[in-house]
Image (tube, rainbow, N blue to C red; front, side):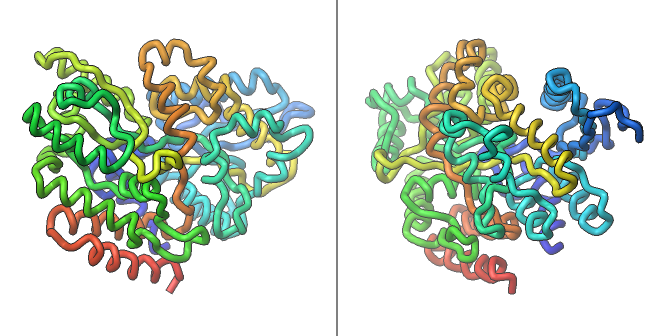
Length: 454
């Protein structure tokens, strides 16, 4: 398809500026390891009453997250001896996408897989994805009203695909949101006793930090996801709910880029020379703010520890909700990968759903989040995260004050191509001094062509 080569670029080069990136990959980066399995392929003859399913996942099974996933699947099978799960690593999300697109032709498809919602939208359009609504609301197999209330609200919304009439076609697997990292010590030196809650406060705080401390305010990395978060925080949207028209050139998007341009012109924001130098500058105490993922806790912690060893004075730091146009109605951007079930025999679909449901339970969600690369999908998962909260107290803020207000972009097949256009528009504003309205109007016109399928 037209977007396949771009997907490979984006997903293989997330750290190299193809877009998507506040500081590190917004989802686990594709690997190049060969396909691996955590157990031998089931034999043709299974014990009576046992159902086998094939699960395609993107993680390297010899690395921390992949090892944890393998352990969790084995624990699931212990709890569910009537199910046999064959886990197959597909070398990243690009590997899964390539295998799925090939499988649409050959018929060789898994029972369960994970992918980005825009990818799942393509597979759903081809008619191979099973809707999850019948499982979610089933009296025996589904989630109770208490369970549904425990799920963070934007996560199910991310699985409602415009191409399927907003049926729920996906369930959260590896999700994060955009927050604002704050150097509280530097902010206090500038006379601020609270984190800026509005964009006006944020801009004023940047001027105060420079004037009173001599330090910069905001080292930035151009990112379509960060811009989407800023747009949401101003009450806007990047696309219309049907995913057929770009809206990022409306006032919330234009005002967001105008703010960034003002900060650059005033010497308050700068693009670090080195790749992803934003979090390095922050860790070295040289910046008051950065915008990045809730999945970057370990990255920031390791950079901070390295800075201390190099002689940087300790400072207080945390992640908070990004500034808002109206703090009473906060919003930020949600992104990540989701489970989806491939249409097959009812018994196999039900078996796949049981694994999805188990993985999303509070205890398992807390265990998965212990790697610090994804947020839990349930609020009650915090009850099981005592060790994590002791080491990273701001995780509670991320789960309770950021994630509940995170909203996904519409999952459309052309999403990555549209994001590439948006990324180019941001670059034109930060580096070529193109007027934000002009840059976003150009990108929107091209995006509308893609979204219409012309």
